[in-house]
Amino acid sequence: MSAQVLTADAAKAAQINLTEGHQGSQALHETVVAYRANRRQGTACTKNRSEVSGSGKKLWNQKGTGNARMGSKRSPIWSGGGVVFGPRPRDYSKKTPKNVKKLALRAALTARINDGAVLTTGAFAIADGKTKSFVSAVSKLSNAKNVLVIGNQFDEVTFRAARNVQNVQLIAASDVNAENLLRYQAIVVAGDALQTLAQRTA
Image 1 (cartoon, rainbow, N blue to C red):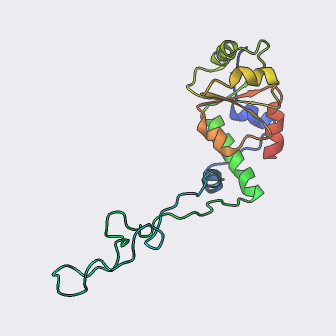
Image 2 (image 1 turned 90 degrees about the vertical axis):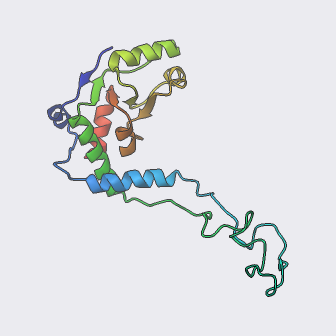
Image 3 (image 1 turned 180 degrees about the horizontal axis):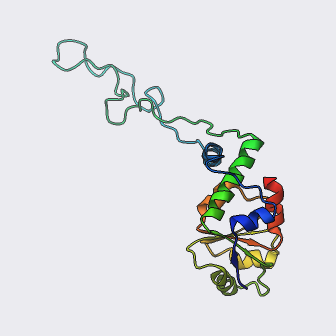
């Protein structure tokens, strides 16, 4: 099993719609930011002075003690008091139009092809389902530290062989996005997944 570098000319011959110059750079930025924001749980929460435990009793008289006036031990200036302007639960999700995602995918794929990071190979499958065989097969395709393998579909045996390998990800061509293409040092397009990518960038 071997792989060949996908050039820009070969990509155009495969009817992959590439971008020109800096076209799509803003769409790429907005899309990746949206993907990352949508993964945030938004559950960070701090307690303000009305929520922390503690008495509301005035600590000492307003006048006559020589101390600064103080109304409650739950004040933010006290240890154990409330937090001022701390994080509260919120929704970080962002909506991205389909045409912007499509343009971002084209821009990311163009950038990786120009970098020489996209490789093509035949059908990718691990017959025995062993992790050792999977690592050996991937190392023959690329010696990069992390690799993204794109295929139209992978059988259950191949997925089982790959599940314990942290630096390699198998993903369907119909599901791959711009962030996936930017995250990995090498991208291997297996089998007829190139046609699916061409349809998604058309």
